[in-house]
View (cartoon, rainbow, N blue to C red):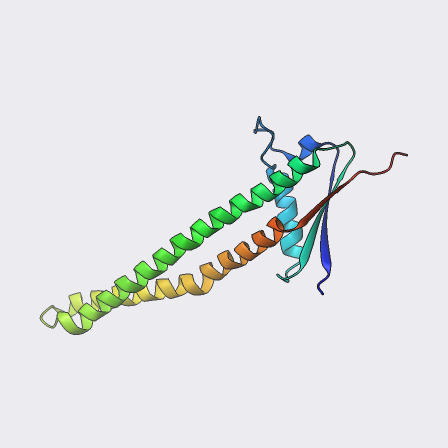
Length: 166
């Protein structure tokens, strides 16, 4: 059984959680999101752990609304990341296909062209394949890790507590 990792956030009132620019008070502030992600990413790197977001508030808050806003933020971030993964996949496929086509032309179709033109086709073909490979090996894993991290944050248990009056 995995250990539960806790991320604590101390607020004075519910408005501390929301962006000052959102009149509906439904968007989390960038400071709050940054705090969650910084604590999550730097302290807890194993992906299969369960997380607890523990909010300590000095004043009563609408707990249902707070939980919905936190989950909605990470759900939207997940949608945005999925879109980026799809775009990156299309870019990888396009570059690999373009590279393969250019190399095929270089090998089979253009025996009459000058040596200079053949060299340009060869270089462009290899660059296309190399770029697709680089994206696959460097950029894609980062986005996949981000998706897993966002899923963990979205599925984290959220608890709100109030310190006892002194």
